[in-house]
Amino acid sequence: MADRDRWQEYLPPAIEAAKQAGQVLLDWREKFSVTEKGRSDLVTEADFEAQETIYQILHTAFPKHGYLGEEGLEQAGEDPDFRWVIDPLDGTGNYVHGFPYYCVSIGLEYKGRIVAAVIYDPTRDDVFQASLGAGAFLNSKPIQVSKTEKLSHAMCIASLPVAGDVTHPAINRFLAVLPRAQTVQRHGSAAMNLANLACGRADVFWSSTLKPWDMAAGVLIVQEAGGLVTTLDGSEYDIYHGEILATCSPNVQKEIIPLVCPAE
Image (cartoon, rainbow, N blue to C red; front, top):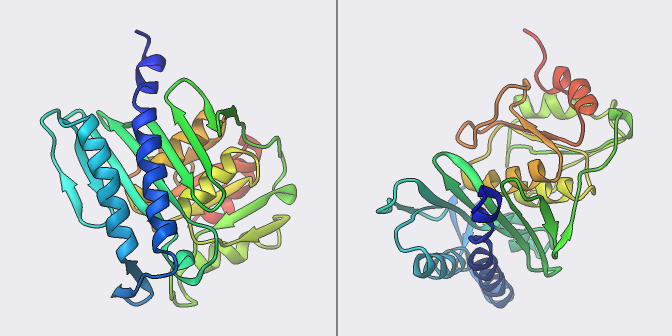
């Protein structure tokens, strides 16, 4: 079996897990209460129930795999090569406020590399998926990044710190790009930002403060859709590094790197 076919076999259980977790989020939408892990770091009962739903489905299908999830899930597996990286609710702040821009994100890591990925937007019933070497899809239709070649034509999405100080470097990056891009947005869900870049709805996304579960699935979907993913300075990307620069084309990437990572 070719590797590209091998990785596809992990997608159906992941899609089922993401959809069921998405339904959990919708069911909780009108009845959850909010607690705080820290200032503006909101967690709901929905996060925990959605994560447990994902874990139960995947663990049943793949009992020897390991698991890493945002809400305190860290479990080594009998097979050390495989680990599922899970964000049961990416965009919690949006969810809490009823803003329909949040999702479930599930990525499968094999020997340190993401090989299968699913992002599910329950508000639109959209399933983004990819497996290594086999392309990216939205609701079973192939997707590609946009053909934008100039930053001045690009829709950019920035990740800004929650309740951050005005002196934070992320604010400086935002202000540096703002007059050069067609538009710069901040939407509050890294996984959705990456999914939308993959299908051509956005052209650039960057952040310096993400966790592995925020971007594990989205990175593969962008790459399989023909996009570029690096750190802010254009070097090799690592989901455990925290930095990400995702772009639709080499030309746009070349233009934006000096703005988001200026030379000392």
